[in-house]
Length: 231
Image (cartoon, rainbow, N blue to C red):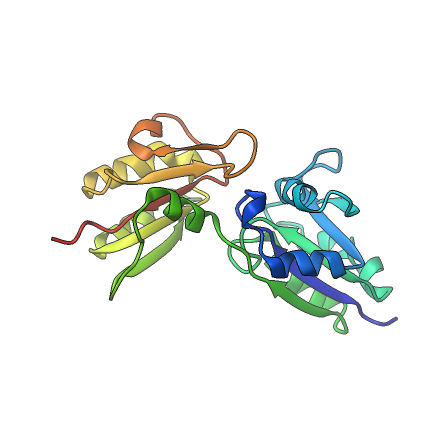
């Protein structure tokens, strides 16, 4: 059987206006668009973006374990289409090469179907959207930018803050938002920090960490901590 082509397509943080022309072209040219979802009965966030910009596109909704813990079974769901020679566009929020389910799926597909070609189309990430809303650049001149996760707490964030003058982005730390806020406060970096979740989608919430710190946020919440003002 001839291998098909698997393309991870980043559709941006959620706002349909932030999907790229290249992503649109890849979706329109694909034989099949696959949208991951936690339940086949529910529309996932990436699918919502696709339906907003390409309402007539047929979307194959496939249930995935978003933790990546069962990527072997998940990849098997794509094989019948790929081994039939189809070009399959797998849509994902943000960028498919950054903290995305697509990475583990692509690795398994390469193992199970070596003849399948695997590509990606980059997408705008949530922290870029939030940075634009902050109205302050995250890095200029010789500044550094640290991108960490908050899945297991604030240890990575605290190490990044200890590095001194640098912007910090925290991904997937919504359930630890109160602890994130306390870490920022101890470092003198709470002022100016912004948290956002469900950007561009129904239920969007964006605001200062200092105001939204008292309750956990969603799994995909993003925190942006701009660098300290230069004197």
